[in-house]
Length: 300
Image (cartoon, rainbow, N blue to C red; front, side, top):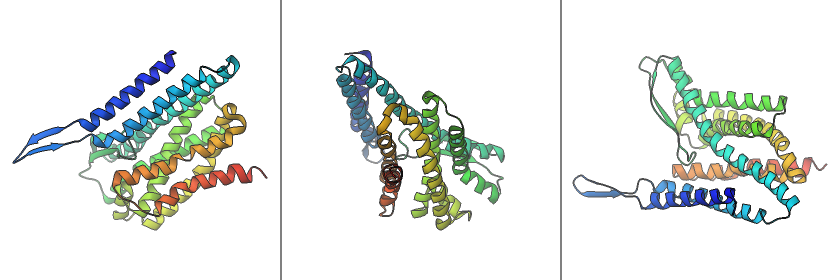
């Protein structure tokens, strides 16, 4: 058993242990009657899923280590890339939340003379949302509109700036992978927020609708335009990033990447405790588009 495999087994055990702790932890307090709550059970499924992914990764490493020398070298290179790709995806997801909450909402609060009172960055977004609290006693309605829309606006700017940069200049995959993920999460944070919020308004979209800056229809149109534009650009960047490692299987890698979207839609609905039949097919739209783009148009 090599060091990498051991580390993965240990990490998976830690996540499984965390899931068991989250399930069994009790919070007790007494008011008129003794009350027992389980405040961390919402984290059981995400922790267990992470543990399972790490365990499967360890088994994959174990299997790869038994291959022939030449094949093992190729597998190790692919494994290194895959591990870095997945880790970067999680880290950049958290950073994308920081961009939305602090660089978006928080920066505009400071710009208009307000104060950030608290903030929370969720590791399990979109099942559990991040948030930022602020105090803006002298803000005008127009300023409140900018603050409410700041997270979406800054996410759009950051995402498309990175997309243009990666289209314009080829960079080493060690830099392009985290930048690609950060662009993707900011892209989803903006376009996905607008599209899902147009179906059942919540969070920033609901506040923007109440302030009169958006309607459900305009949120859907803007979100769809942003989503389609970003889809084609990110697919091109992703194809360029994956091709040195997947070769002729690159198209399958691009297609697999877009399965993240229906997973995010499902987690969003589960976290909000709602289900909407319109959002289910929307989650699979990028997969259908990717299939047509990779397997139909490019074959002609």
